[in-house]
Length: 71
Image (cartoon, rainbow, N blue to C red; front, side, top):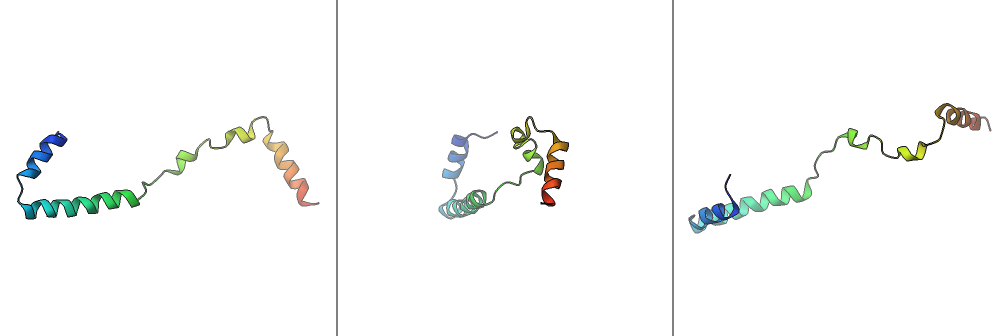
């Protein structure tokens, strides 16, 4: 794999027009990476907020919620 210094030396060997073209193309790539958020998986939310439910019986909670519907 080429190092930064290797690439830099190669760029210095390009013509001015080629360097400007490369610079413009790199700007497009960088702008795209800055503004495009990586896609996240819904699975990354697994377990989020689980501490909220610690010590709460799920069936009892459901029963209380249903009872509240009837006033």
